[in-house]
Amino acid sequence: MIRELKKSDISGLNSLPPIDWKFDYEDFLNDFVGENYFRAFVMIQDTKIVGTGNVFFRDKIGWLANIIIDESLRGKGLGFKMTKFLVDYLNDKGCETQILIATELGEPVYKKIGFAKIADYQCFDTELGQDYVMSSSIRKLDCSDLEKLYHLDNLANGENRTHLIDKYYKTGFGYFNSDNDLLGFYLPDFGRGLVLSNDTKAGVELLKLKHSKKEIRTLLPIDNNAGIEFFKTSGLKKGYKCSRMILGKQNKWNPKYIYSYGSGYCG
Image (cartoon, rainbow, N blue to C red; front, side, top):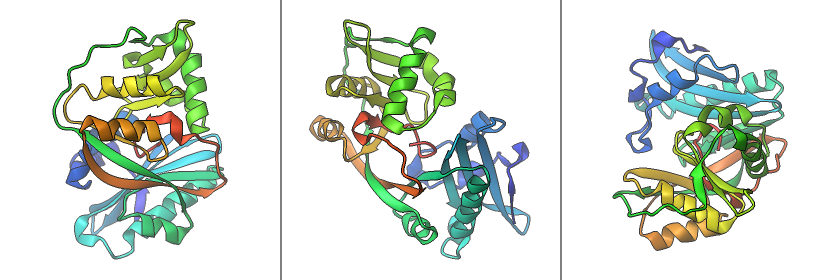
């Protein structure tokens, strides 16, 4: 049985994600449950939660996220059932484009449902902190920057994500030129730390800021050559790969602007 998640279900769900995700699932759920653009579901077997799945949706675009099945029950088709349930839910919401970030384990399941891979992502980790002197072009963001943030985010992702920008911009940083044009921004609290930029120098500088702290993880599309080259020459630990997959209409996005995806729930 699949049903909508209740607040009382959340405690204990950190046991479901693989350890290498380094993901506080309970904190994530507490942050989003109740938002009108988010729904979380659980799969029940013999009164026990054995799987989960989430969706984010806005306008005609939806994201599937955190499709997780208890390790002891994998390989029995439960992941397929959860994914199909989420796809049908987003169809009912009018989503003509459905997107997800797939692990190597999940990719074959999503292909069976009709998702097609459109890009590969590579993971990099900072194991130790780095010395960093902040560029004079970087400053804290404020509400007067919001329209610029919305515009750059839309150029990168081809979506209306104003609701997520509004949620996280207050702790963010922007890279501005001498005319006060926004060339890139970093939102530390948006998932693993979203970094978007339409300028190579700005994008790399914001990555340096992000990875000046230890135990920081970034995933970015391998099509972002400047970002990939930065990580290769910085000596950061190269980790797993995953893929961006889509079902339905293609949306216009620019992987070269994505220096760090926010999270698997929204690229």
